Image 1 (cartoon, rainbow, N blue to C red):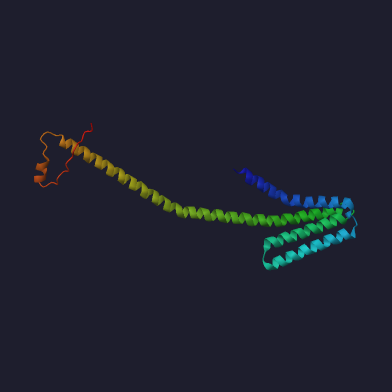
Image 2 (tube, one colour):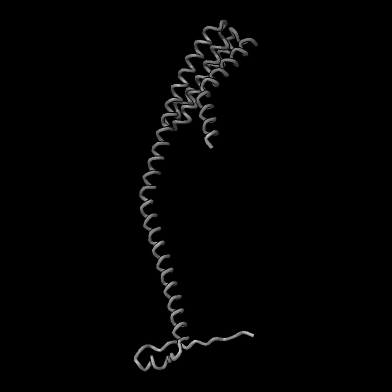
Length: 196
């Protein structure tokens, strides 16, 4: 039952490094295919990164935090791709990759902390509700148990009374009319029918 949660958290821990590594690999492939020292390709990445950054700024002002964060992340990825594709050596792209990975983990850690705090708050609220409703459940269980016991004792009393009446009626010299004359309530007449 805990395996999917563990797998998801392992993937979440590796996701920032996987993302920045993928961007670096694609940029180096692009570099090998003609982007090295290409002004047109660098200009394209600059325009795309600036556009994504502007969209992030607009979304941040509009109050849409998750979309603004995504737009800024895309802008940073495009800038990393442009520099890694344009540069002729590997040292600058690796330095930018390391910097981007650290920044991605900083943002991810902040999100993970917020999720953990939300999960803890939900667990606390659930535990509090269980404690509050647990008392009500225990009272209702006691009440139901008491009703069951009352019903059982009533059934046992009725059965004992029926046995006593049957035993008294079987006694020699029993006269129900004499009991009625003595002021006791009249016993119901019992008719035994036999099925043939």
